[in-house]
Length: 329
Image (cartoon, rainbow, N blue to C red; front, side):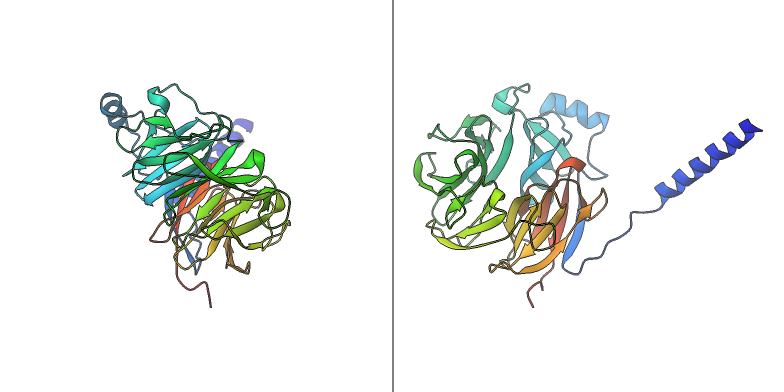
């Protein structure tokens, strides 16, 4: 009798599992943020033929392992900071492939954080433990040390100012911003430790918009500081808290084509959207593994078509959304 009962339980559990698999993931509707997809998606090319082909013709296939930041030209072309493996991963047309560091597949960059893909010659990445910035060339996919200023202290966020042809690097360990020219030579330094204008407390992520305004996540001051292209203070907003409109662990930052400011909160598993005055316009996200759900998200990138890419770090994926116009009434 016990064996029969156990068999019935197994059958029922199997049936329940089959039903759970058959039911599609519940669609979550958001009037302003449209869910687009995941990287890697269901059709990501990791089959045996592709693996064999990559061994012969290209970089090795990769799996996402704690992706913390990214740069994207469109939903089919992304470069991802895969911090768990200490590598940069390229996603193109459904395939993930590792860009080997320093031309050696075994090379490991221990603390990759920032990425900037706006330079014609390649993308820039920062490693906060190696205290350096590296250029990954578009042609040949080779790494080389970029910055001539070798005394960077825990560089994290990095962004390119098209208006001034400058590279802005966040030095988290020194609570300041270093501005480099295209050769990697330091031009000037902005900020010091504190909580006033142009003062920082462990800043991390940075974004520069098309008008040249600079947005800096002043992490342990639980706020965002906005500067003009010359590095002059414009405004700041934010406070510590666990309610909407405040920050628990602010991380990535980006702006869309309407000037709305998106800030990822890693601890709250949410993305909040503000205007320049700091007014909360909208938010989306909760903890979980489904659509519109995150687990310790970090970086964000928004492309020219308002596709929004979120590094859903502990879920080992990128989620892609698209902003729908109309946030500002």
